[in-house]
Length: 128
Image 1: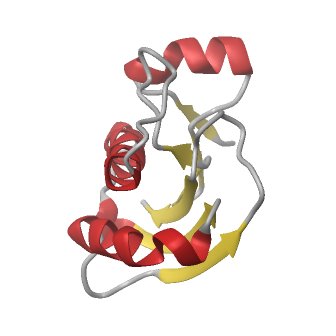
Image 2: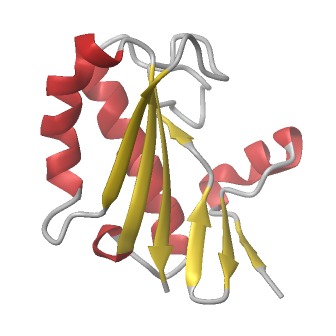
C-alpha cells in the first residue's frame, strides 16, 4: 500500500487541485513535479534564478516531509519553457541542491506549464 505525502505548506493545493505532492511506494518516494511558485500567492517570480531556486525549495519541502533529502534522489526529470535560454542558470541552481553521486536526469523543453509564468517543473524519484 502506498502513502501520500502532503507537507503543511501544500495542503491547500492538495485539496483544491487534487494531487499528492509525493507518494511513497515501497522503497521509493515519487514526487510530483514542483514549479517555482510561491505557495501562498500562487505567483512565479519573473527572475529565472529565483524561480529555479523556489522550485528546488518546494521540492525540498516534499522530500523532507517524506523523511528523505536531495542526497536520496535517484532520478530527475525537468520540464523547461525556454530550455536553451535558461539552461546555464538552471545548472548553477541545480548544483546547489544536488551533489555527487548525481541522479539520472532528463531535461525536456515544453511550450507551457500548469501555472502562468512558470518556466520549470522538477519531478524526482528518491529512495527511502
